[in-house]
Length: 193
Image 1 (cartoon, rainbow, N blue to C red):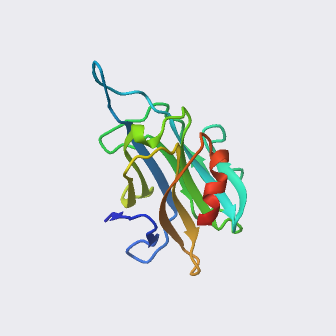
Image 2: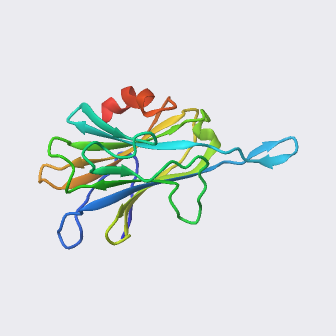
């Protein structure tokens, strides 16, 4: 059963049986919001980019994004860049797979961001979400719906983190940021580490 998360809310990533998850997929989706103009409504394609930043405590260690599709250790993998969004019908526009079993022990958190590579603001985006899926079963575990638009061009969406028990948890962040690339978002990530 999926949990709809509110901004700042956390959830443990244990299966109902008490087992830890092995591989999760962070799926991101969005559509361009129609704009009213003199000649009716129209939509403009929006290229949002999903990134996963691997941290050892508060220190960046590696990043996975459209130009570096796999972490150096192979535990995190981006499935490819979607330049327009709007897959629709529940399909994810971009996905990042995290093999929790093989994430190196020094990595304590993986932060997921979205940035508007083409520079449009989130006022021009609708139906944006991130969701966490158990890759072995296809079951959605948690979903965070991004609402409200805004004049920002980036979003710190969520993170998975090591819990004191040794398992993993997920936190919905949903913090607006400015930037077209993950590098631009680094200062905005710091408060959530």
